[in-house]
Amino acid sequence: MLSLLFLILYIPAVMSSSSQMAGIFPQDPALPIGSTLTATCSVSPDLGLHASSLFWSLNGRRLPSSSYSVLSPTALSVTLPGLPASRQRSGDNLVCHNHGGHVLAGSCLYIGMPPVKPVNLTCWSRNIKDLTCRWAPGGQGETFIKTKYTLKYKLRWYGRERECEEYNAAQPYSCYIPRDLALFTPYEIWVEATNQLGSATSDVITLDILDVVTTDPPSAVSVSRVGDLEDHLSVRWKSPPALKDFLFQAKYQIRYRLEDNSDWKVMDDVGNQTSCRLAGLRPGTVYFVQVRCNPVGIYGSRRAGIWSEWSHPTAASTPHSERALSGSCDSKSGDSNSTLRRELKQFFGWVRNHAYGCGGMSIKLYDQWRVWMQKSHKTRNQVGPTRG
Image (tube, rainbow, N blue to C red; front, side, top):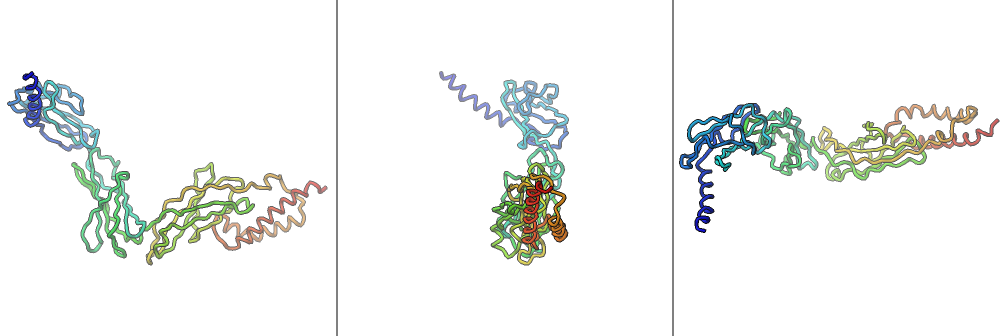
């Protein structure tokens, strides 16, 4: 019983002492991909181990003895040619064992690439008090070892260099500056990338907070029919709440597409209004519509802001064409047909200029003409068969 207790107490003591009496050189090296590494495991003579009884493992897999060299009774080396990239950013585990498999010493191998200059640095503000910046790693983006990205900024002509502190784990290449930003003064902003193999710095961008303001997408977007007009849809929306807090206007863009088509048509002439009429659409067709916002003239800034994200898609369908459903018109339409040609000529120029825009000029008169034209066609189709 006493001998069993002695063994239980003695074994941990040996394990603890062995971990302090053996070591691997080099310890935790960082090497470029494709490098050749020769590592040496040295043990204390007090352990009573001969180097020929030791073996190596990498990431839990035993390495072949053909890669070993006995340098002395207490030193065993291993050579690893053409090292591939590390499997994990925390490093690959190179371990020296005794003949029974006990771990004598370990080293982490960091095999990767130095960082490349970060690119595509952009920044924006949602309330003129904060700033969010995003960038992309240079090259192919993967260094295979832990790489730190630091966003730095300072006032252009004076002020000390500062570092952004709020990084988003869900978006690794972005950082948020929540406060303490100056207005009417440009900032210099850049990103530094560093790892154990080197460092790289992005180009420096210069910006004024007032020139990079954006907003949330417009809210409460609704799309509805315009009476019986078969080629019209009405779009309405509400301005983002943030617009009420600043002295600036906004301009809007609309885009729309057919239900079975992925290509969007963008309208740039919406202006500052919060409603728009889409014209020249296909009858009896489902359309998806989105709206986005761009702040303009913030506190007198001469530059436009940054477009918001698009609103969630909203769908509506145009009415079916009564003419398509009731067949062709009678060619002997007499005075009605002449009147229709006169009206069509009168509005033809208007249609060419405004069929895809949001202009409000003569829109009511145009709507009346369209309704009258549809009723006229319907009436002629009803009386046509009775004419001999």
